[in-house]
Length: 265
Length: 265
DNA sequence: CGGCTCCTTGAGGTTAATCAATCCTGGTGG
DNA sequence: CCACCAGGATTGATTAACCTCAAGGAGCCG
Image 1 (tube, rainbow over the protein chains, first blue to last red):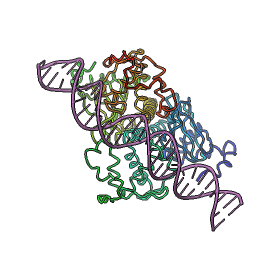
Image 2: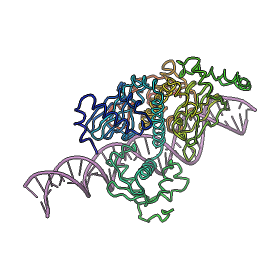
Image 3: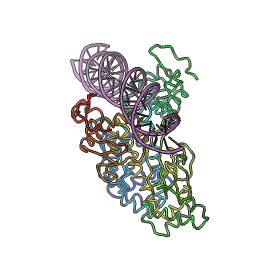
Image 4: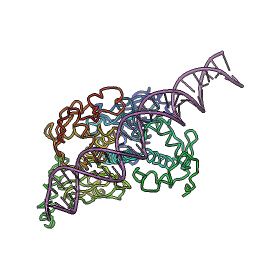
């Protein structure tokens, strides 16, 4: 689903390029309610950028004066640490924006990089702010996107205060919700998933194993199936201290294969 | 510095109340650039709310249709878990807003509660959005506040991926930066600080002790003094893996009481 | 002087990261 | 068709981090 025709189109000069941008903007759910005229003004302050896979878009701390909309491809937002370990904060989806903080801040708070060859629409912050003064509806749209991000980051903070099994449970529930139903497919490597959960591949592997042993899910390659949704939901709330209190039976899976009969709650 | 005159003023009807709100809005750094007319429109959609100390303003998950500006007192934003443990995400400062996510989301992502008797200005989201369409500058201001929050939450996520000593080091550096200089005062209990760092009082106590033993800081009650800023800055980057690599001497403090007369804890 | 709350200290146990193999699995070339 | 290889994925052993429980201090009013 990457960009096979992209290079061709981008080589075309001026007018055509604007059309591409307009199409990109029109297709973004974020800008769904805008009139053609509003889209035109927006397109006038946007630039198209194409990047190969695995390329940084900007790094944490970079002084920035632009934010981006993902038109095609895949991008992730990450935090990187001194010893090269990194945690994925967010996968940017098609039509979503990223780097908005720079609208009113002088540096990016996180790094981003492409996961596939991608096409981005780039908005200069100064021009965009000026545009908002003329088109207040645009401001409301961006505020909406930022509000969503606030909620998402708030969830991420909450997750990191929970133990790994709870984070994994949440992720699996979200994933199966987002795709059809109990059976769902992981679109990234398990190492990437570990990073997304703020842990390491080894721990992820063991935790998945415990889930399988507890009959909460099945795993086949990168396909998961939720077997015991209530138990996962319980685990997702689980902050580790209730371990000693009780309710551990739904979860405790000693090395024996005793087949926790309680699953099937 | 709480509200001794508040009750009196609030008992006054109509006109006076509006004046109070206008003063509150005028004093908020966020609204510094607005004209009197703009402030007036803003005040027209605001309500004043007074709350005693220790009272929830709203809880995580509450359906909400208003966000708030802190005019007087103190408020904190927290995440609470099943077993009653809670972590403080943010201390709201005078003149700052909180709960903005609800502008475009149907529920609050975190809980908030007053830490002192407080006076809040309350903005209905529907009316506020309508107002933004008429006064785009207002939208830019709120976007700015939201952008700051995005940066702050991003930092919070980053912190939680770091070990406790790094989080404490960051907090102390920020605190001493924010107040005059190396010597700084903690405005909350140490238990609260533990919650702010996403840990428990015992761990905080031990970590502080290690800092003191390592001559990084001194502690007297709730007064801290930074002695070795570079070492703290190094620790703040510290993601736990560099532990084995080197530079541990600045930090390693065995159980022996080998010459730390400064432990006048 | 209790009683109170907060902070500290100690002992013990659980979680999860690290280190170090080993095992798949899909792709490649003989 | 199969040996081989590289990358990711698993597993085991070890260790560090830090949370829990439980028992003292230390300051602060009534």
